[in-house]
Length: 113
Image (cartoon, rainbow, N blue to C red; front, top):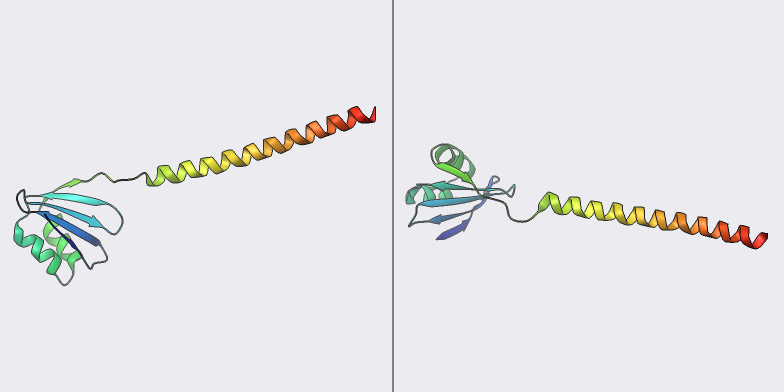
């Protein structure tokens, strides 16, 4: 396997598996894709191209079989979970505060009678 970082606005890096002719491309957006049956020369041209993004679009994306690679991590799920935790903590604090006021006012009424 050969892995290279690519100077491009579109592509962050790429890995090429010579024995299977598979190419994995990681994009700056965070997604990645696998391409099958990619000749050696195409990978070399990708990382040596003046504009790797244009080369990828014109010669790889259109001609190679692509299979999206599953993302790692939880991204949106983690953000949603953090937001839900904040809401739960805030509502618990409000609930605890309202019980405190009800209890305090009941005790005040008891003492005044």
